[in-house]
Image 1 (tube, rainbow, N blue to C red):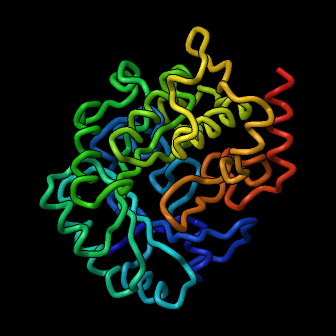
Image 2 (cartoon, rainbow, N blue to C red):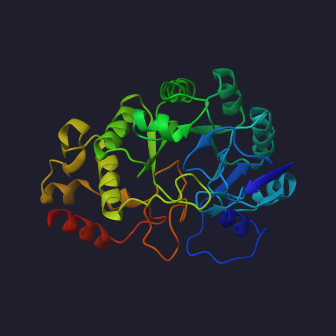
Length: 316
């Protein structure tokens, strides 16, 4: 059986040779399937009608290797966690269970990103060591979801799946994935983050990344400064410092967090700009080239960076 391995993970396991500016702290894998995903999300390399290289997800290359070879190397690695990404295809759940069983001997916690499955499958995943489940909602606007996510699953079904995960795995065990820059307003984006925390879920945010061969290959990525504001909003909501009702918007665009400069320096941490995911996840350079300033820092930035962001915020 084959499994796809992210480039950075493959280098760490000695499956490939290469250089890395930041080492992944989680081992990232993806199910192997020779065809395309059954869904047709406009931003996704793996989409049914995508012309992109099937070895990619976002801008990362995921070469395929023999499962036994991969697992044998995992035991001697320094990873904190395993993360298994999936695409939809016939017999997906059967393959996932085989992979989870293979991983179970490594004794690392497992995160699984998968489209909606029934509760019995969720219970089986839990028995095999899964403790977090990713929910690829991706789009923060229900209206735009229906335009961009040509999916077998509706907006409401994705939210119900998140609730099922929470019921079986516990509070904050469902990680709802959201991509900023798909045409939603900032008010919709932060409102969806608030809704996720209100039901007991967690949120991971990504910046839209145009990839050649996808339906949205000509769309531009979001401005970094606006993405920083979404990260600040996520941090404030997650930590119960503010709610969406406290923020001020004009025509859907964020204009104020209702915090003074002094209050910001008291409550905000530079960790707000790091990758926000399962414990042990740093997801290096998922949205940008290593030569660019990262949307999500894989390591904690210097305190001066926080000062720089806040200085820019209060100059406008």
